[in-house]
Structures are given as structure tokens and as C-alpha cells.
Amino acid sequence: MSGGAVVTVRLVRSFEHRNFKPLVYRDVSLEQSVAEFVAHVKNDVSCRSGVPPPFRRHDYDSMKIVHQAHGAKTSELVMSLDEDEKLILRSDCSLRAAGVQNETELAFFKMTDYQRYKLNPQASW
Image 1: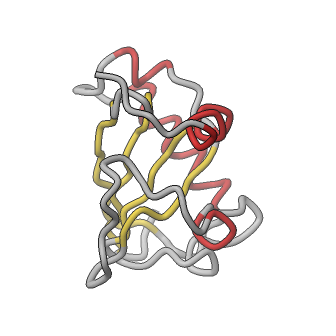
Image 2 (image 1 turned 90 degrees about the horizontal axis):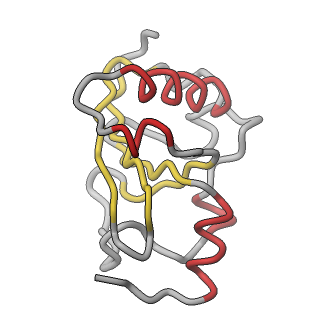
């Protein structure tokens, strides 16, 4: 991939336990589709050293913008529960059309886990 953008991806394994691991991707082409980037990240996570096995085997299927450079951050530790229509990336769009810019931080998670957590957003310690 080429294009020069730096994108941080948070692998969210558990919303309730606030269990996530950030990974940095450099030279990300913002012209590629969200589906292509998702496939790339899934493939990379499955074989990247330093990623614990529970994160490697998790069934990620959705991405959402958590933070963009020079923007306000959410008070949620994992990711905001607001503005899903705007911030969840549609797989048929390019990253750029979905709102991803250089230094954007994305959450990569399983949608059913997110929907369940959103119904009862309580943290477990």
C-alpha cells in the first residue's frame, strides 16, 4: 500500500473490560476501500508478532472513527457510543470518503459485541 497516511487501529476485544490493543499502520492509501483495509488489517493481525493470541483470533468485522488529528477526544476509554451513522465506516466507501485522514484513530471491533454493550454500557473490572 502507498499513499502516506498514518492510521492507528485499536483492536477492541471487549468493551465491558476495556480490553483493546492499538496498532499503527503507515503508508495507508486512503483511496482503497474500507473492505480492502479491513481485509489487510485482519490478515496482518493474524500473523503479526507482538499481538497476543486472544486479539489474533477475535472476529473483528467493523471499524469506527475514534479520533482525528486536531479534533476533540471522547471521554470513553475505548470509543464513543455516539454518531454511529457518521463514524462507522461503510465497507463500500474509500477510506477518504468515509472520513479517514492522516493520523486518524480507528476502532476495529465485532458489531454484535458493540450493539450489546451499547444497550448496557457498564464497565466490568
